[in-house]
Image 1 (cartoon, one colour):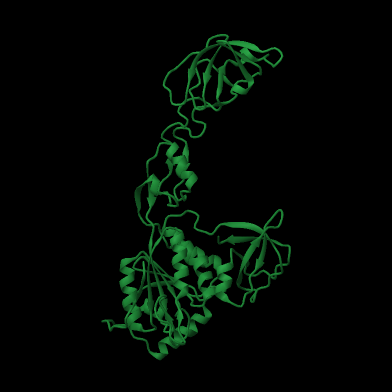
Image 2 (cartoon, rainbow, N blue to C red):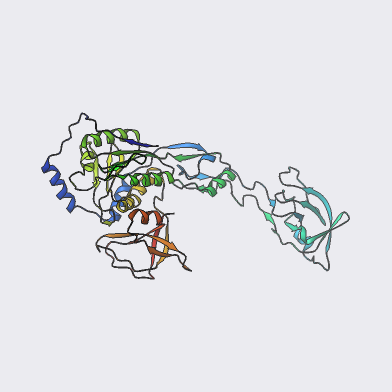
Length: 432
């Protein structure tokens, strides 16, 4: 959905902020902070998935299963041939070789999808194509490259032990076996497996609609004229792109630092969406009103300072039972706060049982040193091939936006840990 620019229109409200109130809140926020693990636990502990819906299997890719799903049929539904060849009794061809072939009488033909059932007799064989039903009393299929036709007979020139080239009934999917767990994302491969298991419609959790609101007198919506001193609201487009990657709908707006406008916008969008993510106005500046406006609207704040860098000004609360994420305006802080707190919260809202970025082990290509030892320090970087493990190199580009755009991984120094030396093996979050 396109951007909506909010106009500063007076609204009826009983929200007002005195200088003393704002100064008190600033001082209070400076002394209240929590660690990343605690912040994440609080966030996920207060969010419940949205309700479920049933969708056509063809529309279910990347949706999250709202129930455990089991196979309704066996697949394959019969014992079938894995090769073009000849169904045999393994004992009949146990001694067969190229020098002394075994002669078998050809006694029929079966193709994939055929309904004819044939029985194999002593010293006989039946021609079968790939996918064809295995005849009764046959226990192997001899590939045709090990045979030669001699009149109406077949000469077997190799043995075929029991089970050779036979796909047993239910090998791919056994009826009543578990296929998907509740909270599991449905990958393309899983969708195919569900189809083989007899499903045509599946229960999934509803994807949330997310309000993404950029705040600040200095930002303008992309597409509008850019006057001197202004910049485009790129943060909200980055957040939008991440939400869309996971199938979420979005409603975006750019809002000036004005209490009336913020109040009206937050009220309107909270009624039309399942969650709110704000960008900017998150800290203690003279024009940072976001948290105060949410407080005036009656939200329940759970935290508004995390010991992470970048991203310390991240806040989380609930407004009318809907999650609200306050993110700082600096691009690096904004994206890091979104990826570490807001995205896991939104994925939980979408029913995902594992609401985290994928993680792989990587070897550090250089030393990593954080700014504060009592914080979790994060680094955007790139992964390069490195033999047994990929190698992580932090991006130190002077352009914050370019570093974000080029990053395909994030490495971190956990709270309380010192510098990490080159060659260390560390877990990294994968972004692409």
